[in-house]
Length: 166
Length: 103
Image (cartoon, rainbow over all chains, first blue to last red; front, side):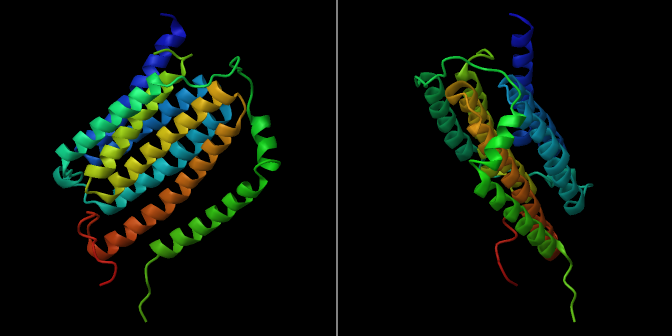
């Protein structure tokens, strides 16, 4: 067992453990902060997969943007004092059964299927390749993405503003 | 399980997906449901990047992962704005309290 194996196991443990905290924690603040561990762990997995640009984007957008947004929403909406009822769950047993069966199926498929493998796995900087793909092959989806972001921004502003009554 | 094996990444993705689905199914707090959605999107991204790395060898899967991250940002912004609007209207974000679209 060498160093990279140990780091991989550590990252996998952080990812899965934090995701479990998000799913099972009784306090929504703990859930929100555990999301940080999952996002950072997934960024670490991207590094292991040779996707340096995606890892950087993951840290920038998920940790720097979405997580801060979620924490803001948590602070703004629930009354911090009544911690006991902040993160209620319902229907746990049927959900556990569904989720258990699904987990078995997914893991069985992941381990049992003979996936098509590349001849050799390459590690190189991906930012240039991704930029080329965005500006040639995926130009139209790229422009559509900017439109979607603009629409989402305007929609968020319209939805969250206070209505001024005449 | 090893860092050079495709199925280990798929297993991690499956576990994160299942935990996200459990969060979406059981939580009664709207923000927790959104957190579950983020977990599900992250697990999909792990699969995209893993297949891009081990399967095709080109960067197409990473492009899709970046699009998913972009849509997740848009979804979080709009979703949390809706949650704030629901909180202003009902004084709670329990998903069962907000069952009417109009008062």
